[in-house]
Image 1 (cartoon, rainbow, N blue to C red):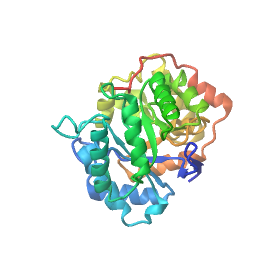
Image 2 (cartoon, helix red, strand yellow):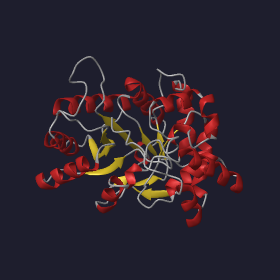
Image 3 (cartoon, rainbow, N blue to C red):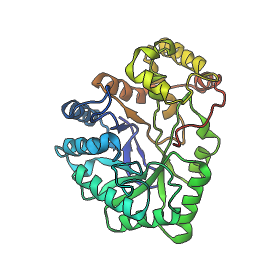
Length: 321
């Protein structure tokens, strides 16, 4: 495993972050607690020290599973991130980014994780019903109470993120140090505004869906043969549109030439991007996890990067919902 610095925090993290959305129940492809522990244990053996979850993943089960797995290790050696925003119950205050929601959801997340302090606390989406000043003050207080070390954000419009950063500066509040956004070889709309903004502001970038939900892990004609693949296409991200199929074919061609997997090429492309800190990889098997870790050692030339990127054409923005 190779390591990098998370944004401007000075914190050292593995170049791959293990996403924990598959830990829990509710969908066919999700893993039981025992299966999840096996993945987490193997990730740590492989050198991964960075884990990302959220309160809404299996309505808290993911946090509980991650917390119980990490009890077996030195907590100081792991970097844990979770999120807040999504609906957690029938109570209307169990969602959004009001002070009440943030404080009670953070307390619940810490209980499930079995931790006094979470390393990175992220807003999962933009809250149109709560002034950003209110949200930033609540997050700043959480840092001051030592419940949170750093704060981050996830998919939103660049102008919203710029507003949040400016609000922190204007009010002398803790600022977002990371952006977890939708970014991969067949979804590159973030390159227009969000990624240049993050680069300018020294914000760490943690792409979610780095393999486009599996679209970049196998030939496009085989996607419908997997349960997760059918689900990904139903999300409407448009991976197969506007050059997406040709990108997929070029990933397959280059993988064959190098004797590696398509997934490894897709991850390697991201790891070659200077503005990316650590892609968030979700997996349901040890084999796929080990495959992903090996991608860290794959080199792509400038011409190979250009060859993979050339067919891409703009598609509709997605992932902010």
